[in-house]
Length: 124
Image (cartoon, rainbow, N blue to C red):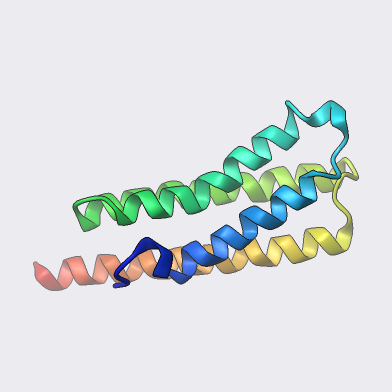
């Protein structure tokens, strides 16, 4: 496993996703500042934050739990982006690009969870 949470590729990709979503929500209507914009930003920031927090936990089981939280927040982001697209706050090309970023982060999260679970089973 990586030495630092900063070394985790999944966290790096999640950070890039958070930055992109922040930029994307800059174009949302001002009336959504405390609605969808705020909710989407909070969810997307939770993804890399939970990964980092999990890496700092004392056990691999706790790390898995935090990775699962990050995965849940990622699903929130996907849902909220779909709502933004349906309301025409997010264009098709932006939606496709950010959705692919979400899918990539999701694959990395799933792979890391599987790898940690395997290592736990190997110790048993």
